[in-house]
Image 1 (cartoon, helix red, strand yellow):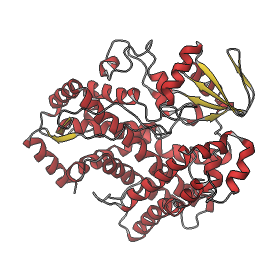
Image 2 (image 1 turned 180 degrees about the horizontal axis):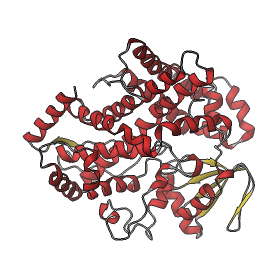
Image 3 (image 1 turned 90 degrees about the vertical axis):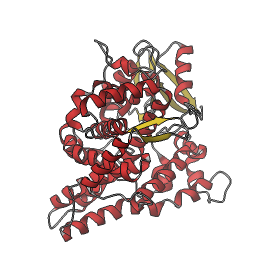
Length: 456
């Protein structure tokens, strides 16, 4: 199995075999890789009743042991997952997500005057909506706490020994119980370092909001709403759900949004003509006298096309999150054994030349033709496991993109353009690169400072 850029290799396997579904046998464990939207739609959407489970994720369940039961993204298909999903849906469906638009715009515009780093911007957006927390421009403890947890999860999930826990049943017991000093088991020692950060990531912001509500100083947020709804005698499950919903948003939202914004910055450097065309469109609406907001959404078709192309060009999760089939199944003559891990190659689907001509080019114009492709919704997952935060994610990224275009020019540093290289893992990022980001004019700089002052 490839350790880097698997989405490209799996697509090549599919082309060489002449099949949109590829089977890999890893010492007795079956992996089915879906390389077309057709296969993914048939199995993960139309047959979602048996394709909505998750793999065992033994590394998370047994090495980390606790602290992840709030994340329904990795929970097995069952009652606990359903309860969390219902609670999350109540706050992040298509209609409710629109109520967060003012917070998204405010968080983006305030970030400009303090720190344009993607981490700061995305952290501010997520923490503002989830907990009503005003993020510090540098060294914010809540943002740093989430980054520590994500670093730990990335370490565990990318370790080859950890993969054995999920793929090879007979190695589970010895790897789980061997001491951390044993060769190959050092990941256990590393994983233990992140447990305090994991607990703190959930408990600290929850305690902050609870204290703010008691003091009458709480600002509107998902956590404040849910805590207020608990009443004076909350149940244990009610408290757990109240911690879990904003916690999942906090853990997963900033990471994925940062990936999309990094891709946007990379695209603006590599395709300066796209940036200029978008800036002309934004200027035609704002006349440089104000910053854009969601009232301008329908008047900015090219900017909207850039958002779609960012999601398509390099999906945040190029191989999506794996599914697990619960019953034996057959797809176009292929036998799929129960318990097989199902991987959806989203990158391959978004680079299908039949649907997306010149798929490797960043080309917003492909979304502006008379009969455009459908919105690239598959980048948010499939079936009953689709990302429930997709509506807020789209709008948060749009808010950042349109405001950056309105006020800043993005270019390479000293004419040295970055390479289009992405990290492997569930969440994929561009390889670290330098960018020259500066105000488009003195008037733009004044406007940014004035807007931030008004927000404060």
